[in-house]
Image (cartoon, rainbow over all chains, first blue to last red; front, side, top):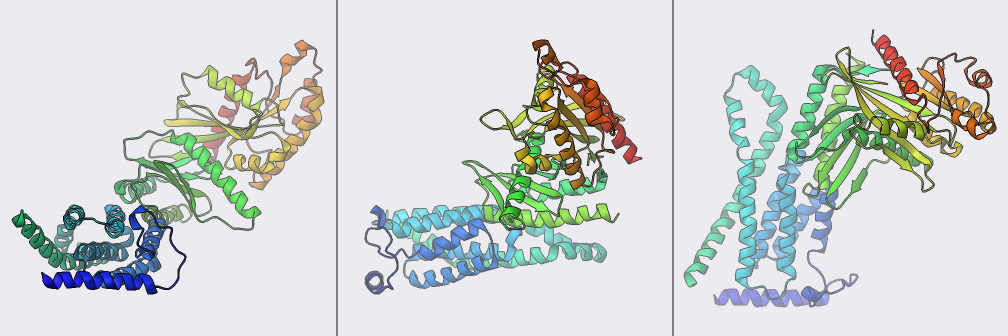
Length: 210
Length: 134
Length: 201
């Protein structure tokens, strides 16, 4: 516990220092929610999300991945924000690999994640449990999306058992996207599994406290 | 000059429209020629637009925009898209003579739709090329 | 470029009403729309200016039922008649299957008719079509105006001006009153379908 407090303090100081010594950019008009945030940390991410909404290009997806890496470093001590970014990175990876084969809901999820991330980062004085609630809603959405994606997998496996001739035909058309898709799903699963566990533990400890 | 497409080609085109556009949540999609004739159309079964009038207007609209492009020295505008509060229309030219028109709600990201329409355009192009080389 | 869909057993036929400005092209379509409102299930589409002049085109689609087992969908269009709309007029003619040339019988418009039919010939040539080959019907509109003492060009003169080389069917008509509007339409539809059938063979 004391360690957590220290982390929070270091974080806050780091944040202040970042604010004070940040490169001068056009000052963003401060609104009610972010009156003390001079530089909006998600500015670049927002631009990337908007450009993906407009056109999905390799460049935009690469920029998203870069933002995720940068923001994960920045928020490595803020578990909720970190996990939201993690989810964002995973779904971004899914879209990057699958492009047009991505599930249509991936884009809704991407936008929703950004909105929540934005809210958590900008809103002053959100309690930890409020933040957790936001995260668990997104995690549930992720689960729903994952369930929608999974039924496709058995089809691919069945395809592997059919006769060689039919298999060859199926491979030509399907294997690339399906394999890529499976890889992406594995990545997402691995990335998320550990986070789920941590989340479950936290939620459980939260309940126990009540 | 009349042209005709075989039953099998039309079936394939409708299957493409269904699988790659309607099934991802597009409300209505139709393939027309520049004269405003409807070649293939598919919808989600929930809406009934007057597709014949839409096709006539879309062909006219696209023709007008292309003419504007020429006047300002652009060969062609690559993106033609009308955004509404709830419904949006996207136009995509296929070869010189055909137009793929997609009506979709804000539920679908434009970026994703553009990607899908691009893929579908390539597939349709392949089917259409068989008119010339039967 | 009639589109034939063997899957739906459907033929889409594009017929364009062409002619000088204020000649009565839109009035032709409006009469048909009113007369067959039970048959025309959709709204007539018009793109007009504030002054009620056709800016781009009018569009009236309707089904005429089955011909040789095919569902025939007729699509009537008008072009904007005013000279300045040459570009949009040309757009509407793209893929046309049959044309009704609506001439204005008023004496003062004689020159405009001749210019307009020349313009039609050029526009068609632009799509590599010949005015002598495409199904075409002439309509000498506004004959009702003689009752009001307005001087009209005689049918003989109109025939000489417009039809001496084309030698196609021509009808005296009043789009406003509906005289011969349906006759003109029936004629162009049957000529056009006959041509499409012939081309298919």
